[in-house]
Length: 84
Image (cartoon, rainbow, N blue to C red; front, top):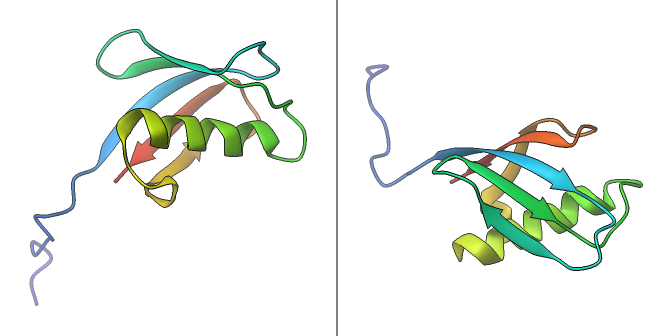
């Protein structure tokens, strides 16, 4: 088997997110093609805000939540998100 074999149906997108936990209203704001601001009502406690960010981005991009994952920035407001 070759290392060059890939599944061509899989499309992967990486975006950079500025998280705003504890916001008054939930919103996803596109800054440019790869940068977004995501405001969620949940506090940054025990992963609640991260789960809400994943859910908000899944709704924004119209994909299931399991296709959205945090690559880095689990405990930071600056996150790298991968959408497959």
